[in-house]
Length: 169
Image (cartoon, rainbow, N blue to C red; front, side, top):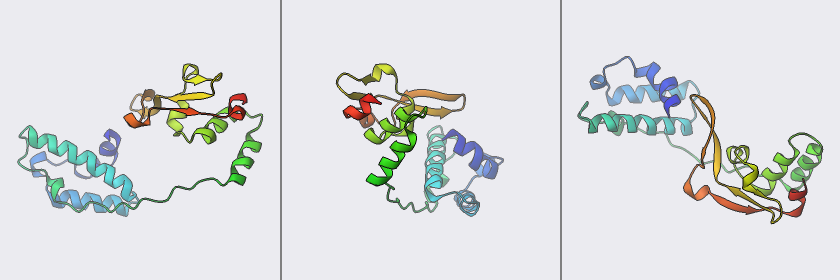
């Protein structure tokens, strides 16, 4: 959220006094961001970050009302996820055979885990004897680089059975 504010909102309205930022300013900033190519989904995340900041300003009595309460939020349409077919999975596994990231591809296909979850795996998370992988952390980009932290949600922590072929890889 910090980067959304720094990169997108501050250049558009960051030079104004907080008490002078109105709903029209926020709406115009959103229109500008959409026009520049920002996706509605990213704009929705940007709106949530800005709204939270302005809500805190209201709580601290820096402003009387939150101007982002009075703007039209972007409509976000969820896209269907693209899933590899069985043939595509076999082709990917064949193409990755013997390459450095073969195990990563194999585990990714076997588990469906997010890339950050896969990249945060430690040997202590992997039980090759019982064929189980424990997802409990995620690799995230932050202002100081990449850091291992908690998973995206508490419900994301899970144990996943992997088959003998994946264990072998």
